[in-house]
Length: 416
Image (cartoon, rainbow, N blue to C red; front, side):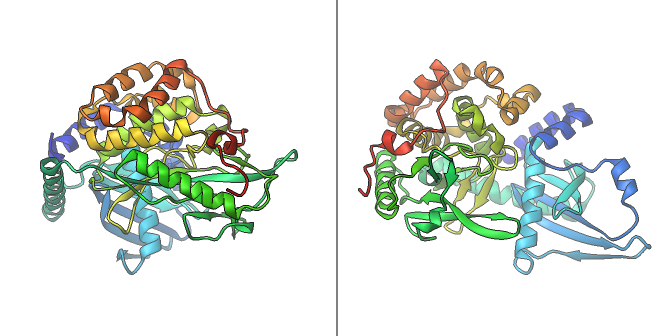
């Protein structure tokens, strides 16, 4: 199925949803939606509106309109380079809005919400219809994207994977978080990452950044080196190391996977959501469900300077070697064979809600069919060694324990 056919199929699915179903999906994903009643209440005063046209998960144009409420209005085009921070923020929200509704192309109108964010006003799933210049722009975007996909299919590259999973340092028994910046630099294979609290940036989270590889075994060896580097730097051996979705209240952790050698598409993101993020949500300690939707939303990605992208939906999979190995294996398997993975349980309203609300029993019903699909892929044998133990855990229905000290599971000795 080519890009245009996928767009038409997505449009058909979108049109079968009621307006209430669309709003509910957006709210589950943490997207603010402005009702007609709310808009009327805000008609007075300064308003900033953005019209964003998206194609192939990228903005092709963002128009900003400032309205004074007294009849005056000023319209400008945002430039990606000149307004990079604002452009990226608005672009990300528009992409997330469309993606949540099953679309990779379309237009989103949004308005500043007064709390530093934006609220969605309306969505046009096919803005190119009847607009000649815009239709030509979309066609050119689709053509270029299709050429990249055709080249990928003809060469069948093996995806290169990287990662930057996080963990916390915790002083027991009071469960006090000790900032990782006390021991680790901001850069390096074992470093610290920042969060902003009350407008102040702090660095409480430890992050491992092993060198990437196309071979799962080599990537995991690099991960062990990063663990060893962290252990040498963290001199307080009384602290325990915790991973998962949210082992300590208020500090969500991520397990971001980096991909290169494979093109970013909506279908690849949906395959990762359905065949990796959904099963992992079934295994996750229920205490970590509070990470979503602010963090860990479906289809969350960032384009990277090296030409690849970062998939940001997963919690920190450092909870155990079994989980980490399985995530690496399934990520590589899905990226290399996603065009054959056609099931989309997350397209169902009840499964979409279950992912965000942590309802394991709903997710459980779909695990066997997803696993069968993965095991039927041509490349499964290449990843089976690391994938099969995780698949067994899915069958057993066990969850991980985010309160545990991960050093014991990884056999990390103090100062090693």
